Amino acid sequence: MISLDLTTEYLDKVRDNQSNCQCADCDSENPTIANMSWLLVICKQCASIHQRLTSDFLHLQSLLSTSCDPYLVDLLHDYGNQFVNQVIDNQNLKPNDQSSDIEREEYIRKKYLERNFLREKNHYTQDELNQMLYENVETSDYGKTLYLIILGADPNYSEKMFTVADHAKRYQQIKQMQMVLANGGSFFFERNSIRNIVVFFLVSRSFGIRFNQK
Image (cartoon, rainbow, N blue to C red; front, side, top):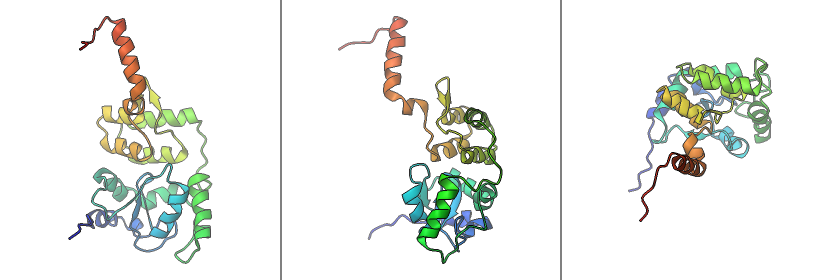
């Protein structure tokens, strides 16, 4: 007998937040797909549009999967559709469960790619956004981190060989770290492994460190 490795545990928890019982993009009932990057829950029909348009920067996952990250599930429960759609949404242009794929695609493109539906205009420079994100992951203000990422802060920004994910880990902010990773962030040595091996070798030689040769 084939095991499908499915569970309703994560879906049930996420739906304790009533706003997650409708698709964040079209208001269809009982969505089951999580946008783990922006902490939203969407329906399968909208998810199929996302796979074509946003898969290079947004991570989608079925909430019926046993492999869902429990930290991100907690954040989906605490924030979810209501929080994010207060930051970026347009109810007047929002599709419904009867809308065509063309209508859904137009809305999703404007919301996620062009970010035309921000409720408040972004007045920050890219450097300011990156710096605020770097500093905020020291804290447990997860909503601000999500807000800054939606505004366009770079999840791979780094200072002194520490990326945003590294910095969150240093401060033991695991949920912050997982949120950054879900948005395409990475650890410095993971992202620069070959270059860092060379740097380590050169620095070691400058200090007279010898390596055993066999």
